[in-house]
Length: 142
Image (tube, rainbow, N blue to C red; front, side, top):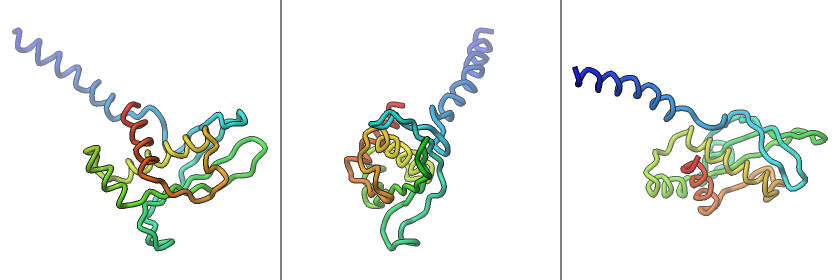
């Protein structure tokens, strides 16, 4: 009997644990970011993710977003994740190099760009190793 109760408790906890692991704290396909240095909140919408080699002959994973806020036109922002740096970060962190991971890294960096105002005037931003580490660190603690 004791074994049945233990197994039942484990069974009941596993679905909740599974849901907790799968659910992300934010939606990386459509989200709000900010406030920016001027106090504005931005709407962000994911458009696509593809290899930079196919569109600009760069060894990157490019993630495109459209951003807008009240009083501003919609703007395109492309976050370029250098492939070699992604491989290094994946090996260091033990995370598989996947499209969803790249989307989350790019989304986290775009949130940082908006809140700090850094590189916000640029359409294409190529991340450094430090930028990737910061974005990954935010993901690890989220």
